[in-house]
Length: 444
Image 1 (cartoon, helix red, strand yellow):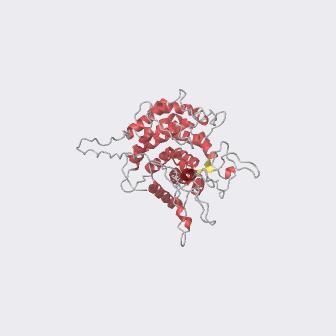
Image 2 (cartoon, rainbow, N blue to C red):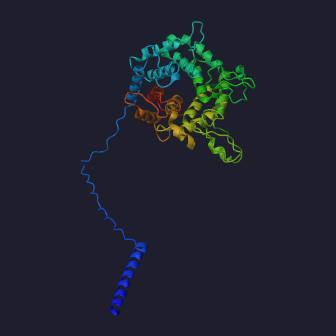
Image 3 (tube, rainbow, N blue to C red):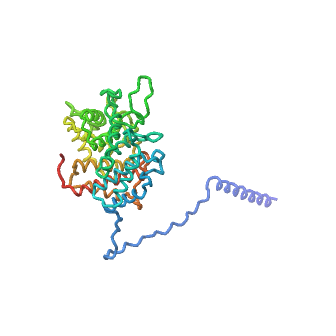
C-alpha cells in the first residue's frame, strides 16, 4: 500500500509539472522565427579602362536655322486650302480661315523678307490675299462672315500688315477699309471713354464696336483693352503709314498702365518697389489673364501689382516704341533692360505664381515671335557675347516636329493648333535669319 501511494504521487507530480511548463511556453515564450539567409553581395565589375575605343556620346541631330525655316514653310504651304485659306481641324473659331489665314500669310511674308527662295511662296501669299480680299465689299465696307469675326482686331491688323507688304501690291487698295475698322475700335472719347478710365486708349477683343455702356447696362463681352490687341493694332497702323499723333498718344496712355514702372521714389523705396521692374503684364485688374499672376500682398498698404513676363514685356516694349513719345523714353529704356536681363530661349521668362506655373509655356511661340522682333528691329544685344538669334533659332529647331510643324503641349491659348505655333515659329526664325545680315550695333 505505501509503495502504491508513492508511485501515485510521483505520477501526479510529473503530470502537473509537465502541464504548467507547457502553459508557460504557449503564453510567454513564442517559438523564434529563423531568418532567411542574406542574399549574396554582388560586387559590380570595375569599368573597363578607356583605351580610346569607347565612342563619345552621340549628339542629337538638329536642323540648321535654314533647314528649320525651310521645313516650317513647306509645312504651311502644304496645308493651304484650295481657296487660299488656312483652316483649323482643332478649334471651331479657327475653321472659317479669318484668323489663321492672315497670321500665316504674314509669317510667310516674314520668311520672304529673310531671303527664303521657295518658288511657291509668292503664289501662296497671293492666293491667301485673294481669300482675304473677299471680306471687302466693292463700296469699301467690310463684309464679315455670317457669325462675325471671332478675333476682329487680330484679323483686321494682320490683314492690314499682309496688304501693306511688297508681296501684296495688288491688294494695297483694299487696305484702307481695314485701317478705318481698326481706328474706329480704339477706346477713346468717340466711343464714350475718358482718359482717366483704365480701358482708355487701347484695343481689345470685343466682337462689336466697344462703345462704353450706359450705367446699368451690361457691357458686351471682352470690351476692355488689352496689351496684345493694342500692339497688333499699332503695328498694323504703322505698316499702313498712319501718322495721327493723337492716336498714338492715346494708345500710350493704356500701354503705360500695363507696365510695372515707377520713377525712383524720394526717400527709401517701399518694399513692393522690387516688383516695379520695367516689364509688362497683359491687362489691369485681372489675376487670371495676366499669365504670371498677381504679386501677393505682404501688407494691406501694398498696391495691386502683377508680375512681369516675357510675351507681354516684348509687346509692351514694342508698343511704346511705336507710340514714340519723347517723354516715355525712360520707360522704353526700363523695358529694354527687362528684356535683356530676362531673355530666355529655353522657356517663357517671368516670375510665375505657383498656381500659374503649369501654364508658363502656354505662350512660348507667341513670345518667340514678339521677342525676336523686339531684339532684331530695335537692335537689342545680350551681354557677354551671347547671340540671341542663335539661341532662339536652336531652341525652336529642337522643338520642331518631323513634318516641319510646331505645336505647344499646353492648350491654354491655343498654340496646340499647329498653324498658330508654326506661324509664330516661322516669323521668329525669319527674324533670327535676318539678324545674320545686320552688323551689330548699340541700342539707339
